[in-house]
Picture 1 (cartoon, rainbow, N blue to C red):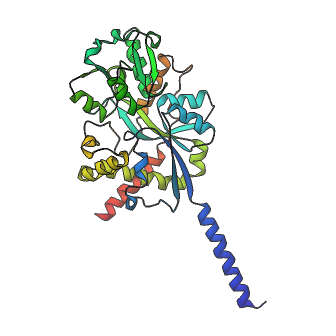
Picture 2 (cartoon, one colour):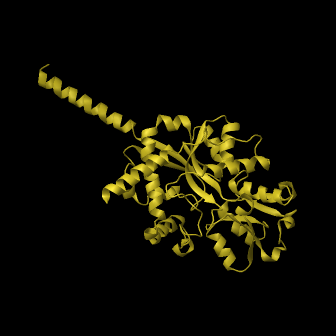
Picture 3 (cartoon, rainbow, N blue to C red):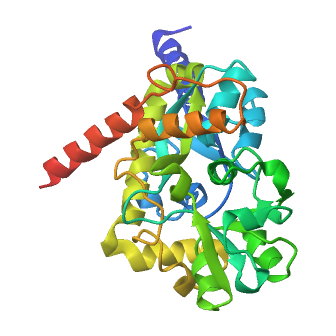
Length: 341
């Protein structure tokens, strides 16, 4: 075999190995989510591909929808998802019930931040319910037992000297709760935007209480992942979180408001006017760089323990939180901004 032929074969083999290696290096991230538009996950990786600097190069995503955050604990334990949308109780359940080494890594939404939206629990004005005490024996709709909204409800009941056993709990997804209220199938339910504004505009509903009345400012939902997944894929995840934060910042930018609302409305098959509250003071708060509110997670965990939702409490920081990914995203974004200026 002459030298030229040997060189040609070596080049072909090298290119093949390189191609296989580059394909293997693209990390597929399976992400759990529950409800739009509180979870923006479904539109972040498709609506504005020009924002995503690393998608398809170092990572791709596969989305899986769940009723709430608690079912995602089981899915993560079974190896079905890599990143989950957790409530604080979900984090504690992952640790205590499944023995997982899991960390909160990024903010999704916070409740009760002054000047911003808080989850509202609505009743019909003709229901005769004017106080929490009136809920005894009434039917309460809940998206998922053990969810952030369920924790808020139990905290409110406890504050009023009541127990969930004093009420009839009815599971219903967030989008179905307004219809069940309207049909008289439940007497009270947590109502997300835009349904909250729409129901209140009819004049037939009252806000009985809001989550912040019992919880104060807290972290409602955050992204979480197991430590071994984070460490094994740290470089690709730096790229993922840079894109994730960039995308969320684009949607939250007031100069992009009309287009951002239009994108979400198209995905949800709703009129854009219904979603004009998004990324305004009528919406839940999100940190500008998606740093999770660690104190807010701890507070929710404490309350979940106090109301009996988990057998043992959890000390969130430092073991169960890792802000290095959003910190790196912030560093990269700020560095790019400075270089462009």
